[in-house]
Image 1 (cartoon, rainbow, N blue to C red):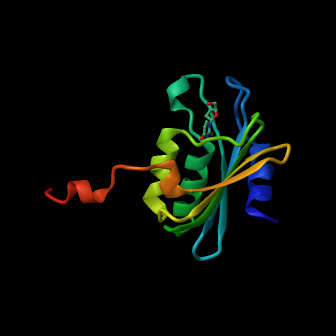
Image 2 (image 1 turned 180 degrees about the vertical axis):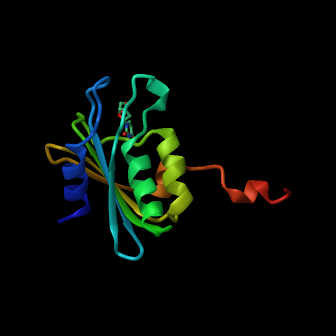
Length: 130
Ligand code: THU
């Protein structure tokens, strides 16, 4: 099963009654373990969480802290573009050269990287005087 297949499968479990937009994400840690997550919306809209956040939370709960690869899938006209917050969340646990695979459920796939998705991102270096 590829990382996209894992993301495709978990997407079916997304809880998205408000947007109707289901998203699935799968992360492979450097250990080889694979973790998945889906978006979980809430009637108090800002309390909803993205698929990527769920996959990352599962990875941390599973004892891994470094992402080797990540895939995200949705029923979108073009491969889904992770939101800004998720780009920052991914960058917390992935090197810039880590491949991010973005896909549609009908088979279009785009490969990009963490650094491409988040140029000039905030990182711990900015806090070096603290
Ligand atoms: N969503 C994700 O899960 N990941 C993204 O990168 C973009 C957006 C979810 C949040 C919300 O539940 C729905 O898609 C519509 O914004």
